[in-house]
Amino acid sequence: MLWPLLVYSALAVLVTATMLASYVLGQRHWEPATGRPYESGIVSEGSARVRLSARFYLVAVFFVVFDLEAVYLFAWAVAAREVGWAGYWEVVIFIGVLMAALTYLWGVGALDWATERPHSR
View 1 (tube, rainbow, N blue to C red):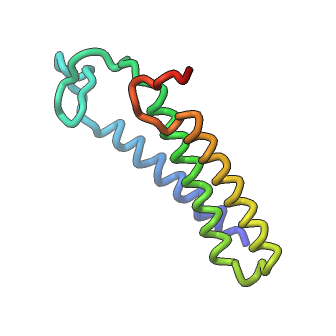
View 2 (view 1 turned 30 degrees about the horizontal axis):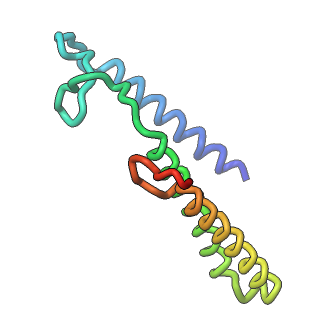
View 3 (view 1 turned 30 degrees about the vertical axis):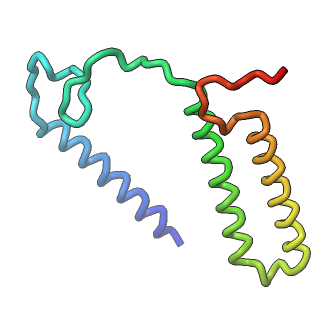
């Protein structure tokens, strides 16, 4: 019963040995552009501290939240027969809460990509 620990230890030693060998055998050079950041081989122009709209982050958070909800629904679908009617009604409530949240977000304009929201008077 000790074999998983031995396999894990052997892999840890192997990774450490690989990193050490890379450090010892690796090339060492210094050119003017060695320490400069680049993207896909192209030297960057401008600052990396570009200000982005908070809407990008909101959409990313919405995506993660609703994607996780899809994972929960998939897990329920796999076990639908085992959970029976109680599980069915629980998932109906779960989807109802999701729809209420989506309706709220849509209503407050969180999903709207317009640059300016018209003010209602």
